[in-house]
Image (cartoon, rainbow, N blue to C red; front, side, top):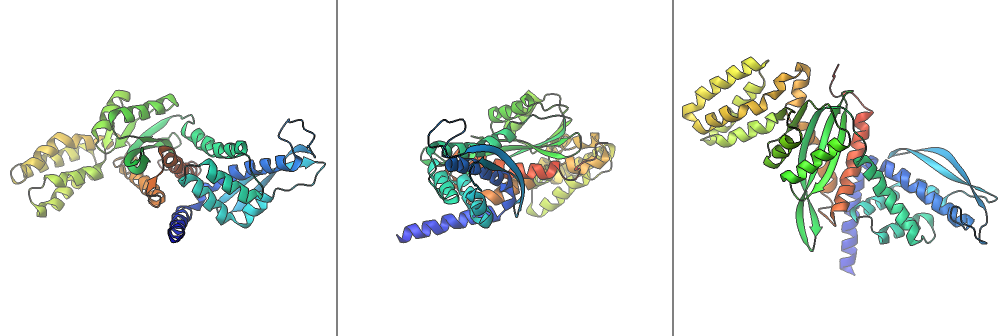
Length: 386
């Protein structure tokens, strides 16, 4: 009994943290869920499903009335079901409005639990106040996944710059816990605004998974790519060369400066070597950067020969950004945009700790990223492409 109470409190804390960490992320899910529950409640009221002939029918569906509902999560576009020959107003909407926090918590539980039929049935019955059939439960649960799948598979257009990266999440699989890679991509479109282009939960960052990820972006219509920005990773690099052989690559200069410090012969030289890299990247043009590089190679050839050799062999991967407009360079020379996105994902997923399955992880990450995507495409220009 005590253990059950402790477990319940832990689940509540996890879910509260998940929701309070960004309740706005569930606005579109609230909208979809309420619209579907209102239709189910109308069916219950009139005693018949759509187009069903039955002696138990008490009234007839009579279309919908549009209603905009402003909540703490954002604006919801609802369709209130109308009924002919009966007085009807959906109680689930009234309950949802009165206890929006509880509804968000319920939706959060759907995500964490992997949208199990048992959980959805419990949640929808609490909202509607009557028993929900298994068919209706499946309908509600599938709506959530359909919405997220539609976002993941939407058509893409012209993308100028592509940022890619991966982070790892713990997922329970076949009785053990594994680290699975969450691959994601940001693009800057022809309007100069950022988009979330792709999300995929994969077994690793091996070439085969990155290749499938890139090919999916192509199949969905991504075109016009001018530059790919990422950290150095062998699997990603091989996939990039295979799928986008003619597209230039910018290696993240921030991570390069960090990597360079690993070649310092002494601890006290690490900061100096990192600064040497930053001095090269901060040059006003490519010719000065090349000159700065040659000077550094000569300077460290004896006091830090491994760094000098690494610098000569690798620095060109970090200088690609000089080929692009000066006003773009600071934002395209690092993968910091992906780092910030991964931090936002981590802020939502760290409370879950271990996902019950891949689908549950993909569902929550997609929900977080879809809301970020909508803010970006309706917000300010990220890069002026002129």
